[in-house]
Amino acid sequence: MQLLLTNCTYISWDTLEFHNGHILVDHGQGGGILLLDEPPQPPGNKKYKVLDCKGKLVTKSFAIGHHHVYSALARGMPPPARQPANFREILRYIWWTLDKSLDRDTIYYSALVTAMAAAKSGSTFIIDHHASPNHIRGSLELIASAFREVGVGHLLCYEVTDRDGKKKALEGLDECDSWLSANQGLVGLHASFTVGHETMQKAVELMHAHQSGIHMHLAEDKYDQEHCLQTYYHRVGLRLNEAGVLDTPRTILVHGIHLDNIERKLICSKPCWVAQNAESNLKNRVGVFSNKFLGDRIMTGTDGMHGDMLRSAKAVFLAGQHADQITHADTYRRFRNVHQYLRSNNFKGDEDNNLVVIDYDSPTEVNADNFTAHFVFGLSAEHITHVISQGKLIIKDRVFQTIDQHSVLEESSKHAKRLWSKMQAR
Figure 1 (tube, rainbow, N blue to C red):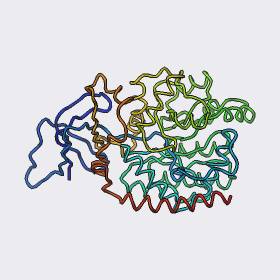
Figure 2 (tube, helix red, strand yellow):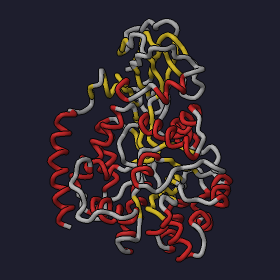
Figure 3 (cartoon, rainbow, N blue to C red):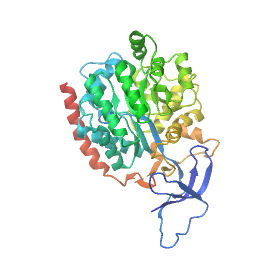
Figure 4 (tube, helix red, strand yellow):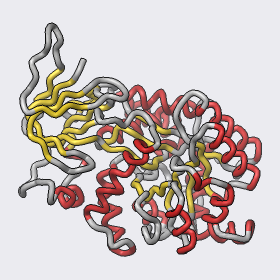
């Protein structure tokens, strides 16, 4: 059954054109929308499910350009046994301890709460980069099943790395291969400094076999470059280029903080994309992103910090005042570039029938000329009232229609305590 949104102002996500009237929303993957000046009369016995938007704004829902399901149960966990002194120790004592402690239930509930947090903040599609070294096989299907339960689309990969040995690396490659044999997705790699030559080569071969792309961290910390220079005698960007990682428009390079101008120009000349994650860069004290020489294929992610893309966009704008000289329009463009990435690569699940209804009580006029300023300084997740994913109303009046949020959070809290205990025992 089609969904009819009445009495609303539709804002085109790419042109920012405003239309006052009504919207007929198709149901199902690949569906579209029809803008109407007058509400339609149902033909014959056909009826529409009507949602009166009462003058609210409606626009395309959001998508997360880089996320980590595995970090979802970390909020409030005890501090590590040893205080990290640098980025590598943050990985070793926190995130690599956490991902090794994940099992079937903690992966599933991590994915459920990730999808719920994203949806409540207006996102109906997540590009995720997953790691669970002691529960690799079937981990992507666990995540996908949780996302389907909430009603959120996805582009998944398993993060392949040599840091836990060759056997685990091969298991990670097998998980990506198995997933890509039946689903859209990417081949995940952690970062150059934990991926040896053989594993890199196998990952690129797998990428070509499935006509996919690589999703990996790039020069997030200076050590990634230092290790590459010492081990391979050139910088990370050049290593990835020689391996063929940069040659497909489906590849996503995450962070890109410590790049020199040669690497930046090289990446710009290739069809791959860069995912910026301002808040985690600031949290980890690794530096501030700059778009210098990188071109326009830059999108925004949350890097597992949270599921709120509006919050991430604000961080991109504020951090960019120091290194980017970024404008409101630039910030909005990177925020929406996730859709451009998905659309240009023919990935499914992010079509026009993914929408958010926004109750934005602005004290000043909102129009096409000033919308990006309202986007940066005004809009927040608290303004999201209804969320529509592939034509289905999954959140109405800020309440999930697909899942019992209270029960999920209650159960996830139990699994989080169990996860924390396992981490402290390591």
